[in-house]
Length: 238
Ligand SMILES: Cc1cc2nc3c(=O)[nH]c(=O)nc-3n(C[C@H](O)[C@H](O)[C@H](O)COP(=O)(O)O)c2cc1C
Image (tube, rainbow, N blue to C red; front, top):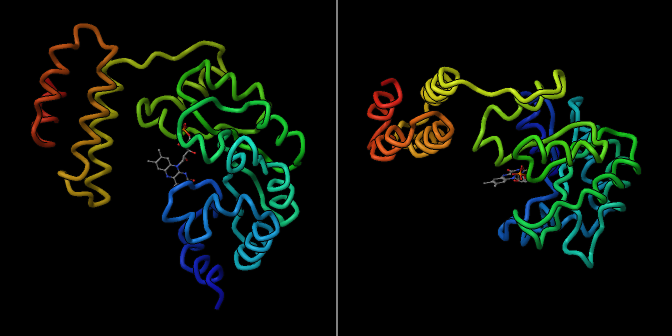
C-alpha cells in the first residue's frame, strides 16, 4: 500500500474533506520533502493529489503559499497542477515561505490565482477584522480562511457573516463573551483535554475578550492572577 493510500485510509472516514498542506514551512517537515518543499515541484504535487483522489470520494483540497521567496514565486504553476489533478478547491496563504507568519499579504497574487483557476479559491492571511476581511474579499476569492484572528476573537466569523448580510458590524455583548468562555471550557472537558492543558488558552481568551468591556481592568487583573480553571470560572462568573 502506498504511503499516500495508507494516510488517506486512516483519515477518510473521520473527516468531511481532505486538505493537502503544501504551505507548511516548518523545518522538520520541509527536510522530509513535504509541506512547502513541494511548491517547487508542481508535477509531484499533481501526482500526489491524483493519488489522494484515487483513494477517496471526499473532496480533496490543497493549501499553498506563493512560493519559496519573492524570487521563486511558483504559485501559478502549482495551482495549475492542483486544478488539473482534480482538486476541489485551493486555500491560498498569500505569503511566501520566507515571510513566515508576518509581512504583507500579496493580494494581487491571490487575485491572479483566482483568475487562473475555475475551482473555488479561499483566501488566507492576516484576516483579523472587517478592514482586512474586505481587503481579502476585493481579490474576489470564493471564501475566507481565518487562523490567528479567530484565536484572538472567536466571534470574527459571525461578525464578518453578519456584516456581509446586514452591512453593519455586530458588537458582541458581555453575556455572549462570558457564555463563550464557559462553552469553550465545557468543550475542552467534553473532549477530555486536561484542565491544566487548556487553562492557558482559556485564560488568554478571557483576557482578550474582556478587553473592550467597560471598567474591565480590575476584572482582567484578577483573571491574570487565576491559577487554575476553577479559579478562572469563579472570576468570570462574578
Ligand atoms: C500555531 C500555528 C499552527 C498552524 N498549523 C497549521 C496546520 O496544521 N495546517 C495548515 O494548513 N496551516 C497551519 N497553520 C497556518 C494557518 O492555517 C494560516 O495559514 C496562517 O496562520 C496564516 O493565516 P492567519 O494570518 O489567519 O493566521 C498554522 C499556523 C499557526 C500560527
